[in-house]
Length: 68
Image (cartoon, rainbow, N blue to C red; front, side, top):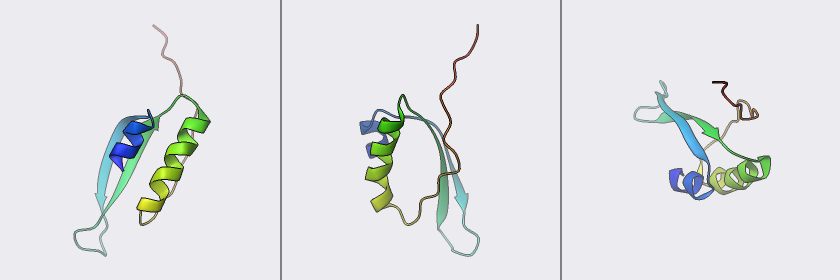
């Protein structure tokens, strides 16, 4: 999955694993991804969805810029 995200040109800014209490040795992963266009995001999501057991999108936000 990480390879497909990288091949799509998306920056994985955070990856966190969380144990699933009712399933020994199973983990849920939460990922923050930065992308340039919604089309880029959609293409990557289409590639990774079939290889996941379940996939939930908690939010999609426009990439912001910092002010110096």
